[in-house]
Structure formats: C-alpha cells, structure tokens
Length: 133
Image (tube, rainbow, N blue to C red; front, side):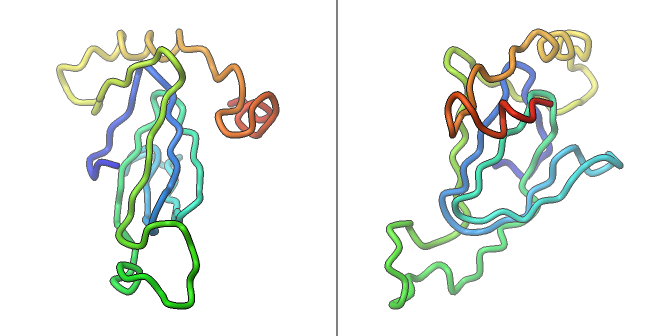
C-alpha cells in the first residue's frame, strides 16, 4: 500500500495481508471519522470506493524477517506485504483529493458503482454482503 493517502473512484478494493504487520489509515489524516487499523497476516479488508487509505507504518519486527525454527508456516517471513484485488471488469484509478482533480466526476464515478454481487471471500453470503454499507 502506498504511504500517501489515496482513494479509487472506479472500483471497490479487497486487500489481503499476506505477510507481516502494519498500521493503516482509512479516511485521511484530517478526517474525524477516519480510522487507524493494525493489520496482520491473514487479515482481509474491503475498502469501498472513495475511502482514502494509506500505509502509516510497517510494524513487522526485524525478527519476523527470518523464519522461526518453531514455526511451520507456509507463509513467507519478512516485511509487510499485501495483495489488492478488484471486482471483475473494474480498473482502479489513483485519486488524491488534490486541487485540479474533477471532484464532481470522481463523486459521480463512485455513486454509479455497484456493490459486490457476492462477498469477495465467502461467496453468496458473508460480511461484505450482509453488512453492505
């Protein structure tokens, strides 16, 4: 994840933490409704279009960079890593809320997006469908 706050107007995003730990920010630094989250390997996050997000800090310790002899995990050791994915047919854009961006167009893009037809992890039922924002 980028260390600069950004959002997408053309798609929702699913993030899967594949290695390490990190502190992420959702909603922007100056947003009183924003949220800081500590995430770890195995966490899955659904980020709706229009929600600013960024990496605040890779909190993986240097000791996590080398495999533990007592750990029999198939997950790779090392610093923070995540995978982002998007609904079929969607392409992501990079928006920063900066002067010069067409705010009306970005808002229109977001309003026109459909929510997930099924939960991106669980299928026909799951939290992304059951608790649609």
